Image (cartoon, rainbow, N blue to C red; front, top):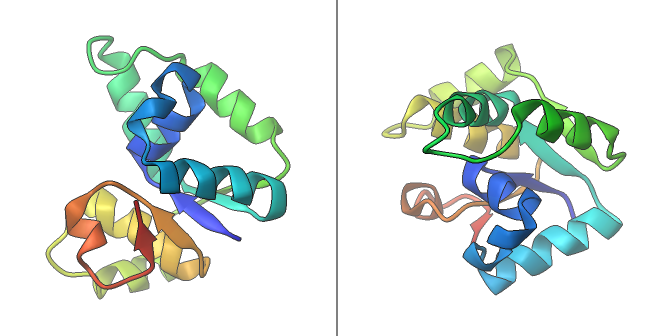
Length: 129
């Protein structure tokens, strides 16, 4: 199974003490993808985490450590924002820019998006929580 992680999902999964914030279905799906598939992460997700980590009251995580850890994992793939993602994003109406890019990444990679965001869950795409 191939999946894409949104920002909170990635953060809550990587900080093991926060795994309880993930739904059981989300946690099990991520674990399955780690052993049998690919986990995609949009570059915009890292930009969001960078922004939030610079404000220590938002996230208590070392951005550099997180990025280094993800880059070292063979089955994780960071997806850049390119013209293909842009074209898909254009068709995704009524979402904030970062959500459009994350959902477009999931569509582009033909993967299931793991997100708690109701706006994404209700779009009618392959999104689970």
